[in-house]
Image 1 (tube, rainbow, N blue to C red):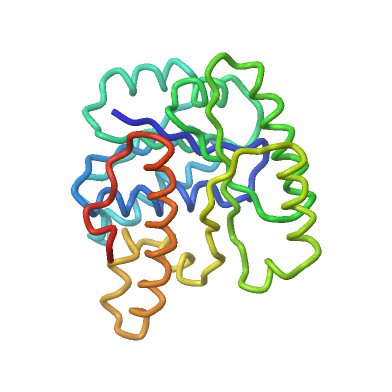
Image 2 (cartoon, rainbow, N blue to C red; image 1 turned 120 degrees about the vertical axis):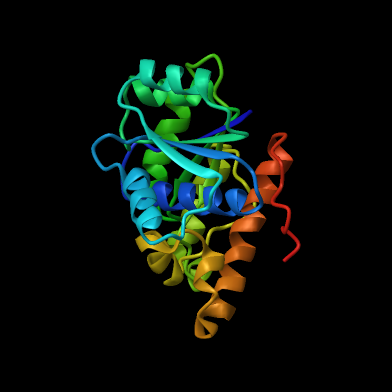
Length: 229
């Protein structure tokens, strides 16, 4: 079993959406995926699963369970038969965040590429150094096409280098189609049934599959079976 955590010290960085995108791609390949929704205030993943189930768009191998304290997390991890577990943690420093990071094979830290977000990201990486087992990787998230040419982006990259933050090479681009996905689509592939969205879906899936390939290179994670698409 492979365990991935999605964590940050603050909300609004897009970690739940990223968790769902990765989970849906892995589940579509037939992998048994469990999302542990450890953000008991928002429960974004749990609510998404319920909406998709109602819309009959949820992959058969994808499920979600809530966790509100470390004991819940331990119990679920001990009993699950999933191949891959993704833990979405509330955006603040607390015991459940520690438990998720320590339990994971890799913790993804999504962040927007600006100085304000990067300051908080640096704090999380520095705080995590006190843990005995804390393999963290930064993921630049919601990157607009023009962002890479801005001073804000260059300043963020400089902070990453100065603080030697380990980052995955794939940027997750900002895409309107992700908004449709988070309603009740179940997967990006499901959206492609609309021919007008097919090209957008191809680009979006390629982006997420690229990120999964990065994760696969970092840990022994089964790649999506149709990752060549």
